Amino acid sequence: MNRIQIAVPNLGNEEIAAIQGPIGTGWLTQGPYVKEFERNFSKIHQTEYALATTSCTTALHLMLAASGIGPGDEVIVPSFTWISTANAVLYCGATPIFVDIDLETYNISLGETIKKITSKTKAVIVVDLFGLCVDIEEFRRQLGPDLLLFEDAACAAGASLNGHMAGSISDAAAFSFHPRKSITTGEGGMLTTNNPNLNLVAEKMRNHGAEVSEEERHKGAAPYLLPEFNLLGFNYRMTDLQGAIGVEQLKKLEEFIRERDEQASYYQNQLSDVDWLSLPQKPVNGVHAWQAFVTRVIHSDGAKFRNEVMEILEKDGIATRPGTHAIHLLGFYADTYGFRPQDFPNSLLANETTMAIPLHNQLTRDDQDRVINALKKVAG
Ligand SMILES: *Cc1c(COP(=O)(O)O)cnc(C)c1O
Image (cartoon, rainbow, N blue to C red; front, side, top):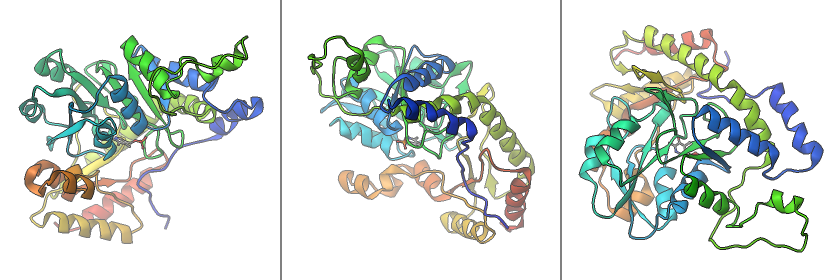
């Protein structure tokens, strides 16, 4: 029997054809395809601006750096997320302040966020984990207008809540095109914002701090001119090969999400009577991007039982993964800040008992039935 993977990227002839463009012209670095990808991405996500980057991690760094976040500043992040949400804060010399999550959504708790705000707090980064949007309107209402409200939307391309697309109403958002996400460019990311100043600074910082882009300089009539560099920047530019792939992937995003949503509904219907398994829920008024279908094992043996289930499925040729990790348990953060596991109890529990089951755009109904049957056979 074939092995059922946890996630599989979905690339086809359209992407193969698209990369002939930049290969043919020889313009491989950030250029016209990246620009088209950015334009289409911002249109879909209802944002004024979009800047393609090498990854979501670099988009997060760029977002904070371009906002002037630095030493002495505190930035609130959830304690259950991919490590780079917090790492990006440290890249700027600022201090990440961790906040526990709500177990129903796996997203940062608004109540706990409010408790952690101090005079040093400059920004809050909420994470639309696994493709479920945070209620940005509610956060804004409760946090007030002075704090920067950023969105790690790595998993949330195409997602929405209450009529607002992911990234559209936060101060800025960072998306990922890693192969584990719903659309991919191999590696890649996107920084979106409606703030013209943030966009302008981020655009320069993405390109070493140069005042003029490579492409403009290449086309320019004054070959002796080198650009001005008035900022500390980085090289976070996406290649045009990736841009060409991104343009094609983006055309398929809506269809990918529709398929994923059908798969999620099927799991929800078929697994509802497995009493030791808690299933993720769809937002009442929104679109879940289903980057992953993350269940939680409810059992007195906790992590031990979860791990046994994962081993049983693995023997059946079915891949599973923990949802993500609790950052305060990771060696670097535990050692640096002296965290104890119980400091963030929901994140600890999510770390020990979440289990993502296969969901991707090459998954068949038969594959899903195999996963469902394997789970139903496990006695709680
Ligand atoms: C995947 C992911 C990232 C990192 O994205 P990269 O593009 O691999 O840098 C950051 N945050 C979250 C929540 C993620 O899921």
